[in-house]
Each structure stands twice: as structure tokens, then as C-alpha cells.
Image 1: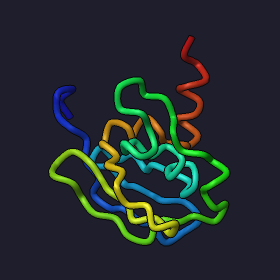
Image 2: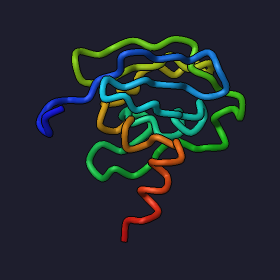
Image 3: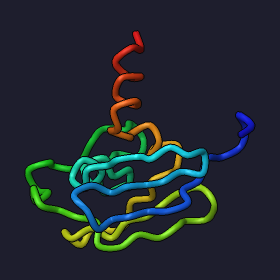
Image 4: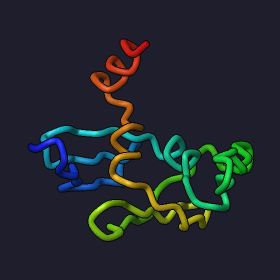
Length: 112
């Protein structure tokens, strides 16, 4: 895949203990529900001008789950969370960077 092409999901499974995204480059991304909810990039959760977190993690239930998901254009996913939050748009780039699979975690650990 060329470096300027956007890597896109081919399948998104929200039914398990984590959200699993299979990407068109063959990568299988793993995203715990609550971790992804706490990283919501919407204006209610992150101050737009500074990037400062506004979301109180204690206000998000430990058992929060994605109940549904949908594509936003050709660049992002949006989730409907069990705490009724649904305004966050997660770009594919943000999702790939948040992957918690072993190879991705090892790659981040090697970075200076």
C-alpha cells in the first residue's frame, strides 16, 4: 500500500470484550471499549483550542461499551456508547495510533 493512501477498516466488531478492527493492510487492531471512550476527541470531551481533556474519567462507567458504529465519510468511525455519548469522530489515523495489540505496544515502547 502506498504511503499516501489511507488505511481503512474492512470489518469492525464491537460485540466482544474489545472493539476489533480489521484493516485493509491486514492489521488486526484491538481497542478496549472504555479506553476508546475515554479518548473521545469531540468538543465536549476535549477543549478545541488547547486540546485539554474536559472529560472526567470517573464519569464514564467502567462497563461502558460501544453499542453501534458507523463510518464517517472515508476517514473516520463514530461510535454510539452505552453512556449515551455519540458525538466523537475517531479518524482512522487516531484509531491506528491507539491500537493496543502486542506489536503496536512493542513499537511504541521502542520509540524514544
